[in-house]
Image 1 (cartoon, rainbow, N blue to C red):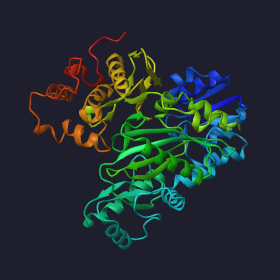
Image 2 (image 1 turned 90 degrees about the vertical axis):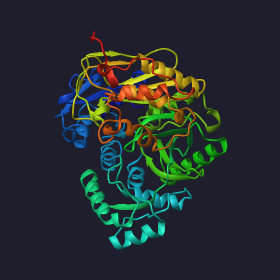
Image 3 (image 1 turned 120 degrees about the vertical axis):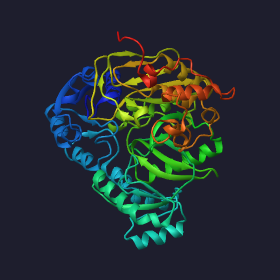
Image 4 (image 1 turned 120 degrees about the horizontal axis):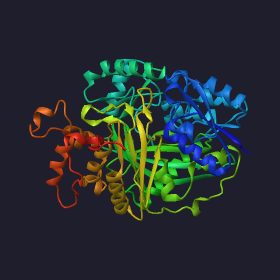
Length: 500
């Protein structure tokens, strides 16, 4: 039995894991950098230890330091959360060699799925549909040109070790291919230490559908249905929901079966997510497997009643899954909005500072997973996500209504946030009827922002909030207007009040 867990992460996910440990009677241990010495995750655990400087490479990404500390404090296990070392197969292998339980999959499974070309090869062999393209890195420009013509433009160049949109390029004209390969390789080399690039057919206006799976070490597999994560900016998810609003029972059965086949193909155990592109002809294509807990896991917890973090811990210590597929049903609908410290008006630049006021939303069906409190310092060193707002309702309409209410209630002062942008998203007709796709924000929202589009806008619109407010007044009856008056001084989370 696991008695002490070192949480190798920070922010809201570290707080989330600490809460699960508390409920299970497990001692929780935090690590923190110089910048995080007074952070919330340090204050909610049983023990906390300084791990290094503010630079992630010298603290949260230093696997040797973390393993050494785990040995010193006699931690039974390490929970990596998401990001940082969560999908680092070398780190997992070192945990295995040190007889420290890694709360996640085996290093072998992570290695198999971590390289995109390897993963595509495995999926193809196991009858999981993949996007047409290569299953190996491109060897030369001549090969790339030949393959591109065979697959048919447009295509996507992708980094084999990639993620987060890095090393990714869309090619519409063959004459752009050579420069794009060089650019993608350089970016991939800097980000991942691997410049291997492969080719996929570009899928026009797809949805991003992913399936949550759980598997124990005894060969038992279940899925916990799917999520729609198509509301994205720069290939990063912003709003997620479960279940996917447009899937039929038949399509759900197809995609969840494919996901289970994908997990079995790499002998996977613990929590994992298989991501698919879903095109306009109702075809699913394997995109990648995330071998860790996802940021958006709360929406799945809401519709299934399963605590995924607790299940991760139980699986890691060798327990058999205590729930079977037939026991699971979809209970209502859930939506999550990721709240970032960023200035939407300034090209989504990260916003830094001290949290001076923080009023959480509450009421039926509302959950907030947060990594901040009053006086928390938001630095330049880490991802600017502050919290996640999750709304659950009996159906999608109630979940949207509850999320709208929660966003109206949520107040953060001291940094600029993206809270108000969610109101625009939730009240857009395409979101209401579920017809949005991965390019929804690029197509509908980004052209409204200042910058290269600013000259095309009427001079009376001084900021994004007033632009959106004016547009919403002209929308059809499906669209609800903003309830809050949009003033320049309270745009996008800069609230017009004195902090308490």
